[in-house]
Image 1 (tube, helix red, strand yellow):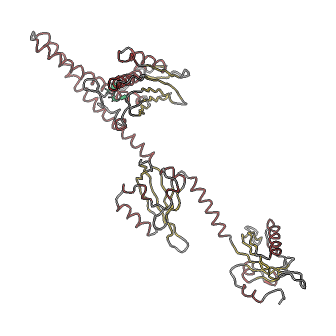
Image 2: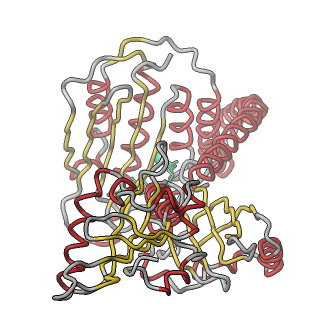
Image 3: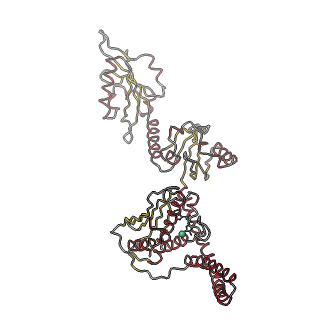
Length: 484
Ligand SMILES: Nc1ncnc2c1ncn2[C@@H]1O[C@H](COP(=O)(O)OP(=O)(O)O)[C@@H](O)[C@H]1O
Ligand SMILES: [Mg+2]
């Protein structure tokens, strides 16, 4: 055996890594069985080969540099490089380079012990992990990873966004901070039973955001299983259902309005005719009788009948199919006219009307009378609200109603904003329902906005309210540019 090869090299024969003794000129003096088997060549063949020929071209210089460092400092050098042993895919290895024999005065040459550790799997795992991280960080779906005890160890940005918590507030916490109390203990027990048995669990859950708002998601929890088939953690993927919930709510709302409308129209029809007869009879009796008491009372009856008739007219208005003629309507002109109508009333005399109308609005096909009815209803409400606020608070800040119009690609938006008393949040959801009114009896029917809602919907538009209670209210009428 060559004197440069230590006896102990035999110990490396079946070492899991590839081991070499190489000379200064990087000629292979010895190589272990593991490498010879891996490459499929005998040790005899490999001996006296140049070690660099095993390296991928791009790593030869780097390797040389490390060898020099090792000799200069007599310290082990570690470097990653690739082996050119397989044409299709170079093998990624980590090289540990150390001096096997130091140069001395007598023998000024040296040899090196090189151990190559296959790190291709680690590298692949690293790449997989990076890929996974990229997907996790960029997906729109909230995602969380918990350890075996259900404590969160990772949440992605989408999760932070959906929950309103920052990642650092969540790590180490149990997902209970999302208010899991919304569901029964049995619900979660069942989930744990499923996932701890190594199976995937899917369910719809209601979580609570940091702000206290609810957010609904479909949750998929899957156990993370390692190579030894042990569960090492859990992976939770959420699909945001809020959008769907909102649509469902809207749909239910629309359906409710529709069915109320149909019902109301039927009732109105049934009541309308008898009411007309009562009204006629009252007038006849009033004319015939001389009794002052009866005349007076009949006058009151007439007033009530007028009131009922108005309600019925509104009900019929709502349900009447729009068989009016569509004509090219200048929406700005319509807004101006509506304001003129409302301004006539004495209540409106101290109110400032501000107009910010987009002059580029193109005329559109609408039933002008009906749209005007919507605008007037909203404006009268605003005037009422401002008057009511003034009477109640006696403060004399300038009351105003601001009307704006704008359009984008396919929608016109007309808004009416007032600095009146505002609408309580709990009333904002009810405001378009029939008979919802906060006005004293005789003053309001609670049908104005309901009728308006029906009209706007019949043009495939939308009527929306925004309000800050105590400060302002804004109604938006959104109409498609081409409704048909
Ligand atoms: N601009 C507004 N400011 C404050 N509250 C409003 C405003 N517009 C409407 N409301 C509220 O909505 C209710 C319903 O309006 P509406 O359907 O027109 O019925 P009515 O005017 O007959 O009460 C009103 O009673 C009022 O409480
Ligand atoms: Mg009204």
